[in-house]
Length: 114
Image (cartoon, rainbow, N blue to C red):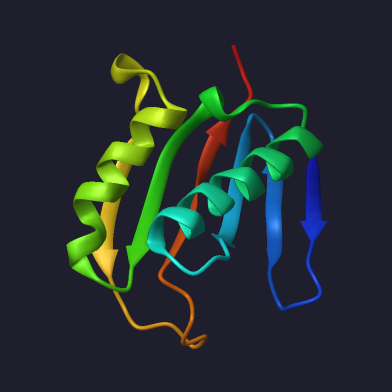
């Protein structure tokens, strides 16, 4: 089974393929990094709800930061969404974004199986 949650852009919010959900880029909005990362997690949770899965089922994420100085805050905020012994595997990198107001993005994979 293959199911896509489309966007108005040239990518899907998510693609469900068997027991996995491949999450396309999610970005948040707000003036500060903290506002944007919380907004991003809200978007991730909404996308996962469309797939009848909770955030706890996320097994891998890739976080893209505009500024490496935001890494400590990112680490702190992850603890707001995941239990200490239940963090997803993660890669974090820095990059420039097309949208100048964008400070971070996340993509990842969730597992729906048992």
